[in-house]
Length: 132
Image (cartoon, rainbow, N blue to C red):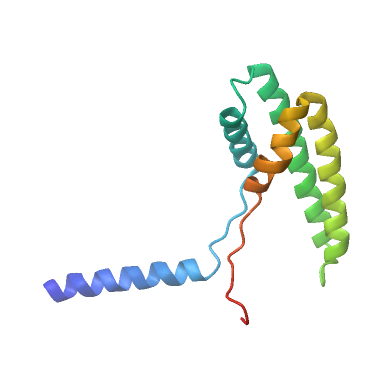
């Protein structure tokens, strides 16, 4: 009996590890990404007003939707994706977003956004040892 339980446990762990190794990455929805930004800004800035957070949420909702639409458009052609074109398109969207944020943020908030908050929201890539 103990051998069966142990074997079942090993089999379950093995199947879970294989499933995760198959690329269990799922892109977050627009709402999840906006909620993350909302939570970070709520804790980073001193008691922001509800109207301020609503306006920021609107800016980020529009930004993330435009980003997803542009990604779909660029990848719809099939074949190789021109990474430079994609990078330029995303940079243009980011610049438009930052212009809208400048209208909402104070100068010190914008500096904090650019220097601390925005880099922390970027997806982190796994680092490889040199030579691999």
